[in-house]
Length: 212
Image (cartoon, rainbow, N blue to C red; front, side, top):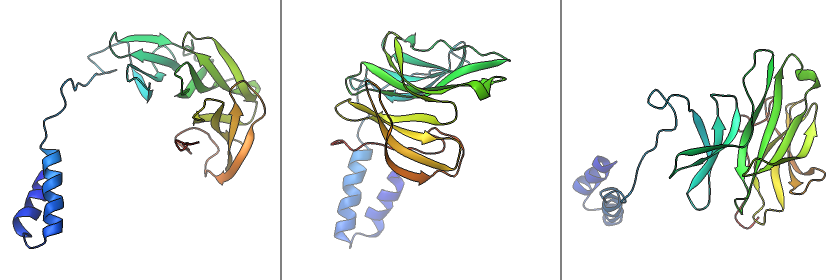
């Protein structure tokens, strides 16, 4: 990028606005990186026994929620300073079938995590797909559940009163709606064609504007 902007400055000196914009961008790119910038490896050959997919950073930047895949597919909170991993769910891999969790999202006050949980294996037809909310010490409650439909949380209303979720799974049509934080019926906001009979960030996503 730096070479491209330098080329603009060098070859198109007659185009004042474009050159001024290129100079401004060059100044930004050439700034020294901020002090304290670091990269933390959360999995790989140099850190055996830990593999975390980060999903969302806390508002204070001290921790993040993610999904851990070594013991099982679990929701975890990772403290950046101490490198401590706190398990929110306690799933383990099992050849006969296992529970798994995904799509964690932090409440605006940072006190709770909404996430999706389900089951795969021999008894999958009898399993329930659930939308959970858990406190940071792992105490959880179910906001919504169904044997056929999935609830994938996408975020929270700014006041933390409800979770924005996508519902679907049996057809290629999904629904976007709200589930109250304290539990209650799913309130549909819109329908859409997802193109897949599965739910989660890989098939559809949504976000909430800052003003809700």
